[in-house]
Image (cartoon, rainbow, N blue to C red; front, top):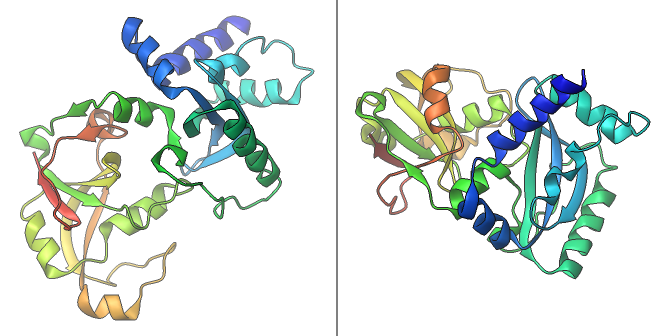
Length: 267
């Protein structure tokens, strides 16, 4: 049992922070003091906070040590999620001094008592925005990937609507619609749609066809009648195959500047 847990711990660390040597040292140094949150990944891929703390360097991994002490509720929870492969770590804020980190940590812990964390005040500044650790690694190291020609598609920017509490259905519904004809024209013969937030790919979808907006039912958003009258198209699709998603989800794909457009051809 302990061997299984240690293997899961090692695998999780490598997945979340796949850096070695000086690259790893520099990344952790650049974080300075930060606030982190352990997340339970639900069946529909929502990230539910279970523990918040602060620290420097690789402090966020400290709670993965000494899990054999099952007298602690936190250890039992983390162990169960590890074995179910439903544990991850988000960074709430970084580049902080110790006092600021304490204030943010305290405020977030107070909010942990609220069942619905969608209204969490995320703070000011780009380094006070909740973001998965693996994505932040790519952002701070400015690592990008090229979309392969066979995965040609369109990057659809969802910056205005995306929330860190979104699960699979919310991301899909804000990506597939609703769009004006000009955006559909930009997509051309794209086979894939890349849902992109702040440069990071949140999901990849296969586009089957474009249909009039409202053809499909929406469950997590209400369609504004005024927007619907001007934006009359949505696509029918589904998640791309896993081998394609692994190449791009959580990564920054190379693309041209948007110049205010929500659609950018890639690949």
